[in-house]
Image (cartoon, rainbow, N blue to C red; front, side, top):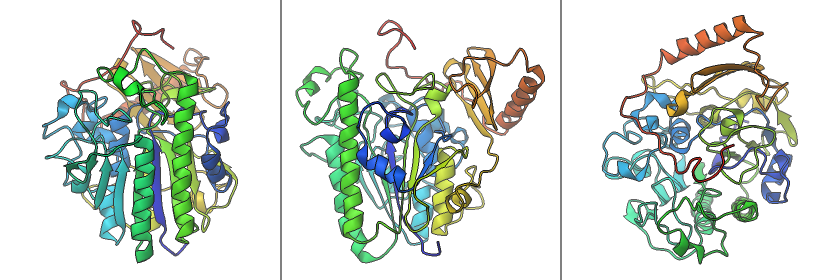
Length: 435
């Protein structure tokens, strides 16, 4: 493991825990990702830093709890934050790409940013040499316009016009970037951040749908599990193109490919056996697939129950690359490199969350999870009850008190949720029955 790996960090958008075949999916949508899991490491107890998009991306970029930054208090950042000088990732903050770039890595973000708008914020201001994709949280796959109707496809900091299905444009641009940088011999870091399978519900065959959803990208009148699965399959196909490019350049063996989702699934996702989804701190909102493929270092076909969250993988990539955090910005993420070296090994990893939405909070320590939703406190034995239906709080009062106190102690180390932080919900009970 002495050679520094190339790194490809693939993030899907709103993917459910059980959507992929290798996680028990009910439809054959992910042959490429299933092969990566079979040839590498698959985590069954891995989490996102948040059950909603941009907060998780703050943690991914900084390898720190997102709560430390004002922009991450937005659940999530929305198009009304255009022009803000506070709601975004501060350019002066060290990031995963900036720290990798400092030790000689080529860096690019191809796909979704969702961490604030230029001129105050942007990928090129936070460590990436190259950027292609949308700045906002959701865009139409064909018009590439955001929820306010603005065109939102960029090359660097310049608006970019391109015909085509966005998932394919992202995949092909990633192949193009690998074709350009791999022959140079320098290590490279590619953030490949798809918008799929996020709404609107459009496959590459559904260009006509763009006119229907122009005024409401939430696409509340459409979509179904069949379209949703096809969106995953077309993303998976594009990941296959990227893997073929790595093979073609002879670098696949020495490339760490990590795949995950930014949060749990949405309307049409399969989260079985978990309950809840996006915006929830129940397991369905935060437990996500984690796949690591690195033939030079990771044994094939391994399943790990190590607890982890998004920022831990960012810390892992930094350690694998020989990069260090800046002293003024110590990492909250814990490197998983020991687990990659010895997959049978696990270590205790307490994980903390909080949400402005519904006053949610959670702590996972060992087999136990403390959860608060709408002022109600719960205690669950997760291995025995992954659906979080058997509340043990009345029978385990001392354990509940201890975990609540532990969460309070951790929370005191974080800035409070600002009074002006916003929660943006695209739909509610009037639009569809709740989970």
